[in-house]
Length: 261
Ligand SMILES: Nc1ncnc2c1ncn2[C@@H]1O[C@H](COP(=O)(O)OP(=O)(O)OP(=O)(O)O)[C@@H](O)[C@H]1O
Ligand SMILES: [Mg+2]
Image (cartoon, rainbow, N blue to C red):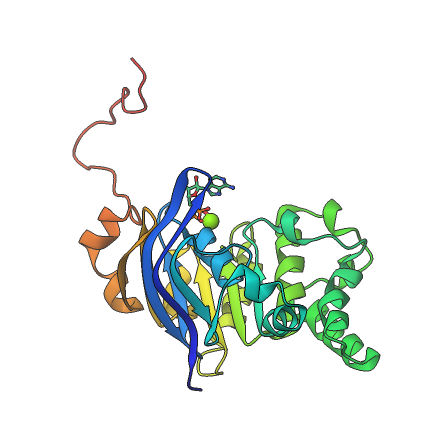
């Protein structure tokens, strides 16, 4: 697949007075699988929100699928619909995403929005229920599920329409080991599929399976961008960006380290 999924040029974004992104430049081609790495607060979720046109750059220029990511462009219903059909974001916090009365309705929502015929919707729901182990929860209210169950419903509800560009924010957070392995399997299978995947994660163990390229954010800027293996093995970079933490050895634990006296 050729073409550009995202082209960000010196992009900035501030929440009121707090600058979350500061001069981000990056290009992601269609079909790439990219991991977004960075410490808490480094700007990963904010960058994904900009990629999903939920927020807009206040500095620089951002493009998705060769069109400007601007508020005025997205206000046009046809543009918005075409964008939503091609790009899907799974939020870090599933509570923000789930709003239907039952899990079944939640899964049906995206396909129905896209105007799929009923038999196609039913078939896709059956696959999603099986793939994410959700069949026993089908008639439950998404809001009354456990954290990990909610996360699985949120993932399934976005993956069901197979968006060309899939944005995932901490997809394995809250998942139990089996669900996590299943999800990693799903994402690993996407290698070479042509789907563009951008995943923000703190789960370094899965990065090599789910991505080929890693972009490291540090305080709202790109600190590194390269092949996953190179980035993960750059110990200095990983330490500087607070992605690995090694307690000092050979010394007794310091009881005042947390500020106690
Ligand atoms: N709604 C908000 N209002 C004000 N500031 C915000 C808001 N959301 C995020 N921020 C700030 O913007 C910065 C970037 O936050 P962001 O959520 O993008 O980080 P992150 O890399 O996703 O972190 P995490 O690993 O904790 O998910 C942080 O300093 C955060 O405090
Ligand atoms: Mg985040």
